[in-house]
Image (cartoon, rainbow, N blue to C red):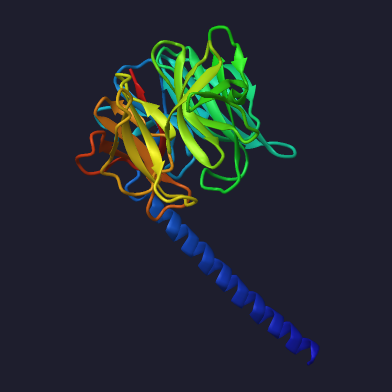
Length: 337
């Protein structure tokens, strides 16, 4: 082949590859635009955790405020969003205190931190995290904050994973860095094992009692714990990511419906009788649900037609009704006030 012909072939190849690249870019842009349809407007504005008429959550809508803590009026969850400068992977707040699990690129690995923030979302204390952010909760009084991270594996559906759960007192800054150090009573007897994991803390209103998931020997348990007593006691099996109702009488949780599979169904358990009620949501929910009030739960599910985005859904807590979208492109909800 002559030099001129080789140049001609090269030029044609560049044009063809360039055309393919342009087509892929245009298709990607079209997909991105489609994910924006129906999303609310998000603009920088004030977000105060001590307001009494709002919802806060992490913005999942495409754009520069993705991952930011945003707020909307509780009467209109799909209203335009006021976005703070604080970005998190997980977030929760109560009584004007928030916990933000933040992950940012580091020199050699992700820099994971738990940030305790005040009502204006200003960081008042920071704690390094031993792994990838997973769950976060603040007690009703704002005194305690808890977080769970993955230190190995990728999700609760992974065959082998390890978690680390910590609780901090936001008054004294005393830190319990690992609940695995707490004494465990399982089925009425003291228990110890090398594979004990805890995750998904939820607090009662007495500034001591909490509930969480204990995983060991291939089983998961609902445990009731005492911060002051540094102990937990098992109450029931097959309970993950519990969430205590505002009146303190019931636990919402995800129940594994197929052993070894990433399939869960939301249930509510009466703590007095341990009787459980499956909810109307039949899709697999891999989230720690939040009680909007004593009758309604909210949780995140993957959004249709969008990559790495969830929508917030609600369902009645008594097993009746039908699931419905609360607001699109959102996660980690918190009821303010």
